[in-house]
Length: 409
Image (cartoon, rainbow, N blue to C red; front, top):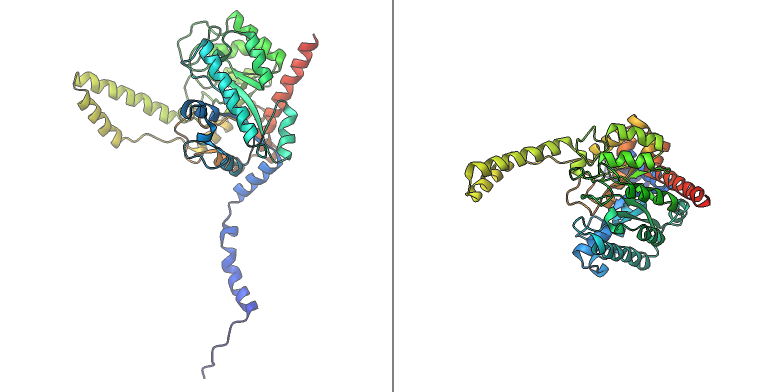
């Protein structure tokens, strides 16, 4: 005998739905990502290199209204909503006078970039606060804001003047990259044939004065000889604000093993960068092969440049460029940790200083996903905290301590 259907009670419905709900978004959450978010709440992730001020100077005429990072900015990798999503606790905003600028032009452009950073601090006081000392990082982070440090990229900015260097320190600069992609009058870059053989006498004076001020010496972009000279001179731990391991990607911009070994003795820090050309050997090899093929086609077709270009584009369509990946960033972290220890690794993205980014690290919202990868690779919590920011805070403190000692002398 068929019984009439009975209405399902509320409690029965809940019991039926619970197993289904258990497989919903909450259950599907990535445990490594949740762990990463937990670690980001405990210590500030401090990114060592962001070129957003250059984007405003170069592409928006110095007008923050055209790059208002209070909301989503489609033209950049960086804005406050995405910094918050990526759980960034500290950021080095970079003053970068373009490589082609020198002398008064470089100085003027640099001062304009400082002004952009100070305008950002004034516009977004609930999100950004100027950081000048190591202790500021954790205090500002605990108050729910992003500790905003300033770095200067390229020694051309000081126009061969220790006085300008001192004034940059007073404006808030807490590191200076000795060169960019061109030599200064006192230091060799990695991007050109050697001119000075490393640091000149004045270059050594610059390093000593940075030690006295408490400004970190940044060796990204420098030649290997400049790296070695600076490590010989510096009494303070140095940094590479955005560089990788040359053993994994053979380009002059990356750090060779002997320099890594000396960096450990110095107490310094390599802040692993997201720049694809410094991450992926496959991409570097592909670039060299593409240059060779383009050159051969132009030689073969002589004045018929259009035909050479068409044939190159056909080759490229059949041989797409490889993409760098988030996993390769973690590979460089692994290598440096294994070579010299976890105390000497940080993160220096180079967001808004590059056009292409690795898969998985497309903008500042993605930092926490890199942390999740370290969780998956079995890094201990304390090791990850060091990589996120505690190593950089230690190096800042060490520079401050050396400066106090030197000023006392």
